[in-house]
Amino acid sequence: MKFAKILARTAVAAAVAAVAGVSGAAETQLTTDIVVVGGGAAGMAALTQAVDSGKKAILLEKNAFVGGTTAMAEGLGAVQSKWQKNAAYSLSIEDAYNRLMNFSHYKANGALVRRFVEGSGENIDWLSKHNLKFKLTQMSPTECITWHVVDKYKGVEHGSAYIQALSDWATSKGGKIMLSTPAKSLIKEGGKVVGVKAADSKGNTYTIRAKAVIIASGGFNNSPERVRDWGHYNPEYYPGLAPINKTGDGIAMSMEAGAVTGEMALMVHPGIKASKVKMLGNIWPISWAPRPVWVNDAGRRFIRETVVHEFSDAGNVLGHQHNGYAWAIFDKKMVDYFANEGIDLGIGVLIPVGAKMTELQKELNDAIAQGSDGVKTGATFADLAKQIGVPADTFVQTMKRYNENAHFGYDRDFYKEREWLTPVETGPFYAVKIGAFSFTSIGGIKVDPYLRALDKNDKPVKGLYCTGMDAAGMYGDTYPVWFSGNGFGFSSWSGRHAALQAIEDEKI
Ligand SMILES: Cc1cc2nc3c(=O)[nH]c(=O)nc-3n(C[C@H](O)[C@H](O)[C@H](O)COP(=O)(O)OP(=O)(O)OC[C@H]3O[C@@H](n4cnc5c(N)ncnc54)[C@H](O)[C@@H]3O)c2cc1C
Image (cartoon, rainbow, N blue to C red; front, side, top):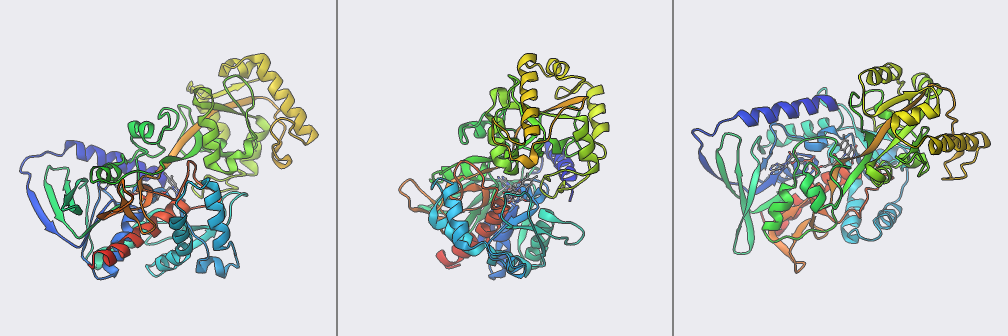
């Protein structure tokens, strides 16, 4: 399903929930083996595994539809899947493990990371047995080929296909999905989590008793307060890209039940910070393009723009600029290049590499004509400086020096690779305001290598498992883009393995 469609559906669901009344509300008691909180990658894998193991399971979903952020994602990261072996691709488990640990500066949980890396390929193979197919894809030149983009299933593709296929499978085997029914709190008795309390949009309440609860509510990146308090980011500089109401519910509930948190951060990425710009239209890829020149609000360059090949690093750099933004500067010649040759770096496969931005000139003209606060043009660098409010002398000097570097073939200032050093000198010139967004939060409740939630004494909170973007231990402060798709891959793997673990621990 297309990203824009998912966002539209979210808005409709929110409106429906807002007008739903509370008259005639009922209280319902249910009993099952496993309750899963959240219907994204982790939750769907947990539900599917539970029913495959012959257990009774109920999945609670806050929204009026399942999918969460996963429905917008494209592919799962894994090592040594059959798909990779068939393509003779050979990133080893050891390399992947060592790189992940180094990347996290050893803040990640080594035993958890090892289990995920070792099991990630087999998890893709398990998904293949659940009617899913994949296209092994490389998104940027700095990535390993770990991204298993989900192929079509019943007319939908990517994350939506994953959700549809697993939800069809699980419900056909007796798994129950309750939409618009957010979990509100955990039930704890005798030191053990024994169920969940939930309420639907009509005011009906549910007490669901179970032998284990699997938290899979997808993190907290739609809660500005929690982005600030838990993630330690300025929420104004790092808004969530997709407003789907993920507010850290599962993490907060687990904390109330005695679990503690580990590393918590955001999966950040660059994006456009301008009014009058269409989401994922032709202007959007400018924020992921390595050729334009990035300047801050002082009119100076601050980084080699090819940092954008790792979107999370690029998000970090942009969010750390004064006032949380920068300008991407390009010229008419580059507009024509994007239209005729296509973009050098895709936004995943949502706007794939090589896509021709034939509407870019029109979208720029329209945004400028409509007075966009973040799309500007000027006949000269001095004119453009005035438009974007940076000191003209500094900006003109910055662009002059960049063009000298480009002609010389060596970036004296930030060592941008020669291949991407394109002169920007054929007016009119353009500036588009760019900054950071978050795809999701990463990290939450501290878990052991078996996805059991841990308390302050590092002991499992019995009956409670945390998965996907609600679990800490996979990451440090930044998402490792070089292992493309590991957020989705880890979510799926951890949901499924939490179910297997719960069945074993609780002898379900
Ligand atoms: C545009 C976009 C593209 C992306 N592409 C990729 C990609 O290709 N590869 C990759 O690895 N990562 C990608 N990501 C990130 C990826 O989607 C996540 O890392 C992963 O899918 C998260 O899975 P999850 O199950 O933890 O959470 P989600 O999929 O978000 O699921 C959580 C679910 O829990 C529900 N929920 C929340 N609170 C409650 C509650 N109280 N009760 C019941 N339900 C609740 C939510 O409504 C949601 O449905 C992308 C993200 C975005 C936004």
